[in-house]
Image (cartoon, rainbow, N blue to C red; front, side):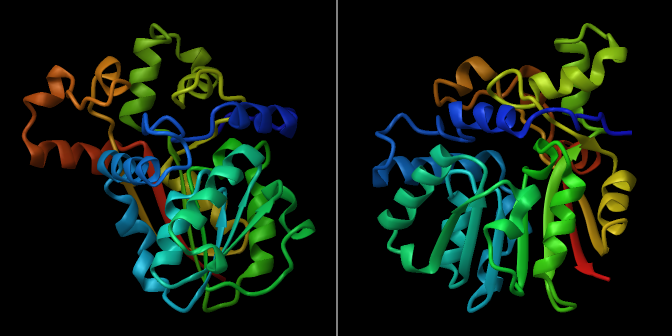
Amino acid sequence: MPASFQDVPITKVSDYWNSRPCNIAHSPQPVGSREYFDEVEVRKYFVEPHIPAFAEFERWKGKRVLEIGCGIGTDTINFARGGAEVTAVDLTENSLEVARQRAEVFGVAEHVRFIHVNAERLSQAVPVAPFDLVYSFGVIHHTPHPERVLEEIRRYVTPESTVKIMVYNLWSWKVLWILFAYGKGRFWRLKRLVADYSEAELGCPVTYCYSRSAGRRLLEEHGFRVTSVTVDHIFPYSIPEYVQYQYKKVWYFRWMPRALFRALERAFGWHLCLTAKPK
């Protein structure tokens, strides 16, 4: 079962992500420059190449997209580039400020509306209206009450809408790695260990993980019919080199055949990708 972080104040979550927005260090170029945004995008999709296929950016041309937790806006701008009208929300102003700069740099600002809001209270800031796609990649597992986000999402969908959500996979290579590399096998501390080491910046206040069945159940208990469940993404690179923008795989992945590595990702990847329709 997922750990319970229901007593964590949302301000603690906001403070954590404001201090270091996700992917903010993906480029050494000046933040806000065209070069910075280009390098951030290349690095993000190089390390997580499954994202474009999951998001299907081009599919939403002429459609309305609601993104829950846009961060610094890499996926956001790709939806807009693909021709979508995007409403992008985030808990943190620092992330939104960078995302707004990105939209200006790429000339899509008129197609993106950015809103600062806690997704658990989405309807307090986002006018309730139907969207063709509600998309959230790696976000709702970091809020104290993911179920409240799903209850809010229900307000913005019709039977024709699609919902795409990525949460972290409990039965994954990364959880095993955290348990033994950082937890020294102390499985009774696993839930807190996973939260502490789930992100590049240590000490994430809230990180839920879900098995395939638990992820499906999370959506189905809140009014959605899951149409696809896939698992992907194992990070194969040596971290000391990676933070220096070098891509050197750790030894056991370096010699692993590509087909075997992909099979491992599909079985024990960190990203549990769920696609659903309203019931």
